[in-house]
Length: 282
Image 1 (cartoon, rainbow, N blue to C red):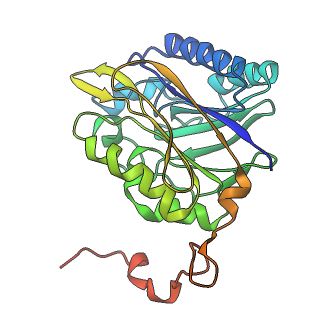
Image 2 (cartoon, rainbow, N blue to C red):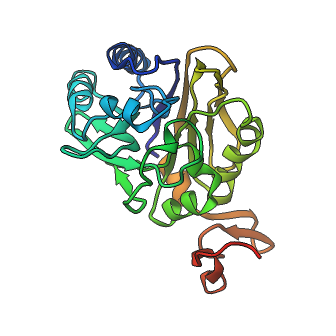
């Protein structure tokens, strides 16, 4: 059974200092590759920082996909034989529009980009445009990866959609500040358990314009068990080995013929109509 070694990089970054942040990303990427990681996951907005106070302030820090950062990282990935998921602000060429995004980059360049769909009223998300592309799963050869960002994790439909599309691993680059303690404690492991897949929530540390970020990144297996957990305030790398075939077997047999569950086959989609209705509770 094929095993992948993944890494989560719990890092700090400087608001608006892309040169510094990119160098830190590259340093961590090389260090993770030295530990034989094959996929390295960085936090939300790792390239740019998060706590911008207006669209005008944030716009100059956005870049297209592909763009300068991904070109640099693709060259590193070719040299190191690794892939990376990195958070940034995406500014499509010729547009005054920003997306909170992450890029999946490998030796071949940009494999895929994801634009954050669910936006909280917080930080730069007050000024970004909601993601306009459906969820997608990306096959890295024998590991199928789905991408989400931060607040997306609070909507169970996000991870469920990626499970139905065949994801073995869902990544969640995030910027969880003070106030998100219970999200860290309960949400991450629940998403892995209820979909029987691997889940990597990678948070940042440090303080930015009065917001303190909580670290505590999590790498979780298909049963919702912690494989690795980060500290509250230190830059560090987390590692875990995962087996895609384990995530693909949704039929769990506890006692043959007496206690069996199937996270996929036991669904009742015909009963889920309200999930797709755009309405508020009365």
